[in-house]
Structure formats: C-alpha cells, structure tokens
Amino acid sequence: MPKEQEIVGSTGRDFAMLERNLLSHLRLAVLLSLLSASLLLHARLPTPSDPGSAQTPPSTTGLAVAIIEVIAAVAAVAAGIWEYWQGYADMSAQRGFLRASQSHLAVLSIIGIVVFATCLMLISTDV
Image (cartoon, rainbow, N blue to C red):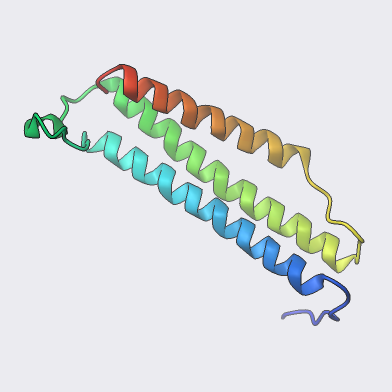
C-alpha cells in the first residue's frame, strides 16, 4: 500500500529526478540489449559502396561480447533500481540532500568501460 508523504521543499522535484534517472538506466539497458541482439544476429549497417556488407560471418567472439552486453544491461537496470530505492529511502527519512552511492558509480563506470571496449572492438575487427 502506498505511503503518503508530505510535500516539503523540493520533494516533488527530487522524486521526479529519481524517476528520470531510473528511466535513463532503462534506456541504457535497452540500447545495450539492442547492441547484443545485433551481435547475435550478425547484423550491421551496410556501407553505401558495398550493400552486402551488412551480414557478417558467425564468430564465437560475437557471442561472448553479446553475453557481456546482456550482463551489462542487467547490471544497468539493477543499478538504476538500487539508486531509486536508496534515493526514495533518503527522501522518506527527510534528509536535506540525497546521498550518492559509491557502488552505483562503480557499476556504471564498469558499464561505461564495457561499452567503450565493445565500440573499439567493433571498429577494429569483424565480429
């Protein structure tokens, strides 16, 4: 059952910020899942000069990277939910400022490194 909370100061704005951050995490997870699906289906955007370049041969590297991307997508959703509930607990306790979690920063840093490494790998090799 929902708990009624009094609107004091910037509570409404803080709650909207928490929802917006959660939706940003979900959007990141959808993009990572889309990248994973394109790796699993061996689909790429074709170059204008070579229309047949959209299909790539199957490889085990692509499968491994796709699995890593799915894990990163699940981690992004988990980090978003964690941040949402931590912020909601801070708001319920009526703290003046919402605290940032260092574990959330660490998880998102790892996800950023995974995305950067995947981009470099996709540019440099045919996966």
